[in-house]
Structures are given as structure tokens and as C-alpha cells.
Amino acid sequence: MSRVLVTGGAGFIGSNFVHHLLSTSEHSITVLDALTYAGNRASLDGLPAERFELVEGDIRDAALVDALVADCELVVHFAAASHNDNSLQAPSPFIQTNLVGTFTLLEAVRRHGRRFHHVSTDEVYGDLALDDPARFTETTAYNPSSPYSASKAGSDLLVRAWVRSFGIAATLSNCSNNYGPRQHVEKFIPRQITNVICGIRPKLYGTGENVRDWIHVDDHNRAVVDIITKGRSGHTYLIGANGERSNKAVLESILRLMGEPVDAYDHVRDRPGHDRRYAIDNSKLVSELGWRPEHRDFEQGLAATIDWYRHNRDWWLPMKQATEARYASTGQ
Ligand code: NAD
Ligand code: DAU
Image (cartoon, rainbow, N blue to C red; front, side):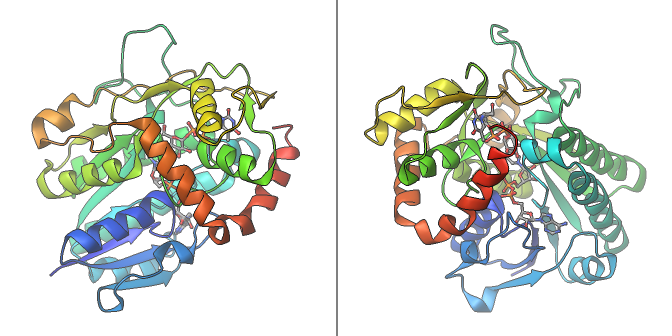
């Protein structure tokens, strides 16, 4: 069976994708991951050695990328600098990885005539008003707010240009906020779960009215598999599971599920340029590829995620202190 090159496979979504693909197909997988602060070898523990290898390296390393792309049939590109707050403190890695890294991969894909799937975000579309009935579609105009989302928007446009000008075979997906196991504790849901476990008061930015459209990471990855197997080359697919919730409501659910008073948190400094609301219209994915989310009960998925963090302290405890120290320096 063919080999798939997965960039960023030691990160949150990429590692869950690797576990999913190896357990549901005969493919072999090579992960290319720089193991930045966000990558974790332990997320790839227990995989079958005869069908899986981890190459520690940078997607900007043109010689390494060329050799790995030559040796695969398909590239699934998850690697990115991924956290908005970090992009506001230090934008450089976002430009380097998300733009230069994606460019480096595209050039190798072009040279070797390989297929490419680009994993991107709904944040490229900017935000919606809280009371706007509209949702993002594949034709919504790009309007990114942060250095992170601008760099992802730029990477999407590079992929589209390589399709049109050089004829590479590529698909793109733009997904909403993921939750589930193996997510770095800098992100909203794992930060608050691990805060409660550590006896730290959870932190809500601003008023907490901002809305995110939550999807379980396994549903995201099943959609990516549908797109790489059935999607049309050159097309973009939006991925979302009708999971709109305010940050305040999500935090209250976490506190309730963990047996804490629902108001046991602090309001902290808001994120500069904070996007108000994301919402995905998933009609194209559903009608064209027949995708449906399996995790339809958010509270149940959240409870399972809380369980995962309770039972996997060794995975996240080493990164917790440094993460909270970083937040403390920005008043968040
Ligand atoms: P993550 O930060 O958990 O993982 C990113 C991975 O990329 C890490 O393992 C890191 O070591 C690796 N990496 C970073 N720079 C690299 C480089 N220069 N070379 C090689 N590897 C490098 O991110 P995530 O949340 O898993 O996101 C994965 C992808 O999905 C990203 O492209 C992100 O934009 C997109 N996305 C994320 C979400 C979400 O809710 N997390 C939603 C939609 C789309
Ligand atoms: O929409 C997809 C995007 O979702 C992905 O492209 C990004 O990679 C991913 O990080 C995520 O971006 P957000 O900025 O929405 O996620 P984050 O987990 O950082 O924050 C979610 C919301 O919670 C956001 O409105 C900010 C708020 N927040 C975050 C943290 C860390 C808080 O209120 N308190 C916090 O401590």
C-alpha cells in the first residue's frame, strides 16, 4: 500500500490523524515534524513500527522535503505554528513555517508530481458579528485578523496558485475549532481543564461572549480522509459540525463536569483583535462527500476529553508550568 507523508504529525490534530489512518487503512506513514514546543513524540507512541516512521526535521529544509516527497504518493500538510496568542507576541515562526514551509512543500510536490492536501482554518475568513445569521462558506472573502490567520490565509493562496499555474493536484480544507485528546495546554479547553486539575483558577478573555464552532478532532480527521479519497482536485472544503458555543458557556460546562462552581474563574485581559464569532456552513462537505459528524454530543465529548487529561498527566504536566509563565507575562 502507498506511503503518506504527514507534516506536523506530532502535533494535536496530526497525531490523531496518524492514529486514525493507520488503524483504518493499509497505508504506511512518514511523519515529518520539527518537534517544536507543540510537537510531542509521546503522541505517536504505540504505532506499528513496520508501517510508521517519524523523521525529525523542518518543512523549510528543501533537501529533506524533496527526498521525503519523492518517496510518497500523497502529502497531508498539518505542520504549522498554530496559536493566535503566540503570533501576537512573536510572529516570525508563523511567517517562516506557514508561508516558507508551505512554499517548500509545494515546490517538492510540483517537481515530483505528488498529490497534496492542505489543512487550514476557518480563521482565514475573519469573524462574524454575534447576531449575524450568516456562516462561512467556501466563497466567503478572505479577511484574516491575526498574524496566525494571515499566514494561514497566505498559505492557502499559495496552494491555490500552485494548482492554477503549475497544475499540481491539491485539495484544501478549512476547519473550525477542534477539541479532543493530545491538544497542547496553551489552547482554551485543555488550558482550563488542566488549570482545574492543578488548582489554578480558569481564565476567560474579556467578556467571554466570543463564539467558536467546536468540532471533535476525530470528526475533522474523518473529513480529511473523505477529502483525500473523494474530494475534487483544486477544491476547498469547509469542515464544521454545527457546534457554536460562547467561550463562557464552554468554560461553565468544563467547571460543571469537573464538579466545580460554574463561576469559579477569572476574567483576564482580552486578546488584541479578538475574533468575535466563527461559524461554518458544511453543506458542500455533507452533500458532495456524504460526511457526517459522529461526535454530536458536545458535553459527552468534553467529558471524555476531561477524562483523557485526568489520566494522562505525564503527557501534559511537563509543558504546563512554562505555558502558564508565558501567559502570566501578558496578563492572561
Ligand atoms: P499543533 O501546534 O498542535 O501542531 C503543529 C505541529 O507542527 C507540531 O507537532 C510542531 O512540532 C509541527 N511544526 C511546527 N513548525 C514546524 C516546522 N517548521 N517543520 C516541521 N514541523 C513543524 O497544531 P494543530 O492544532 O494540531 O493544527 C494542525 C493544523 O491544523 C494547522 O495547520 C492548523 O492551522 C490547522 N487547524 C487547527 C485547528 C485547531 O482547532 N487546532 C482548526 C483548524 C485548522
Ligand atoms: O478556528 C480554528 C482555530 O481554532 C485554529 O486555526 C487555531 O489553530 C486554534 O488554535 C483555534 O484558534 P482560537 O484562537 O479560536 O483557539 P484558542 O484555543 O486559542 O481560543 C479559543 C477561544 O477561547 C478564543 O476566543 C480565545 C478564548 N480563550 C483562550 C484561552 C487560551 C480564553 O478565553 N481563555 C484562554 O485562556
